[in-house]
Image (cartoon, rainbow, N blue to C red; front, top):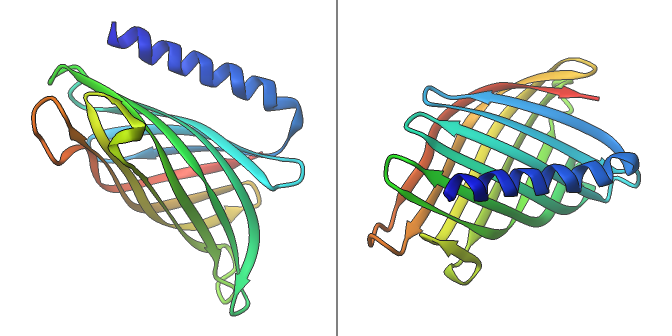
Length: 194
């Protein structure tokens, strides 16, 4: 039953992004690893670069799965002559932990920012924060959190490497667990731009 929901969520996400495929301007594919997990994420922006979205999937040791679907309004700005891309939107998350027999999800409002360092061409820092109150959560989740911080370096025009930290957690309403950690720790990976 839980896997059927995960499959439906993934198929719906793929259908939505296929519909947007003809209107996209910039796409990227992120692949990241930690000691216990692997994550893939496809992101796009529209031709005006004012709307962005993404779909992602994480597998974690112990039969844990996380699917995400993002939608953001975004734009470029500068703070003291440092170029930035900032986005405001939502991340929809669905998780399934087969070992603990729990599943749930949330729609989490949040922000992301990416700042290019002018003194070091190709170097950038970025991060995101998504927080969901219990009213926007379902299943065994009673609120969720998803945050990350990364440092990236563009090796060539269409690819970069990155390292950072990621945390994904939830409060559980079924077990009184106030800090279920789906994932927490250091990550490393690569981003392909096309």
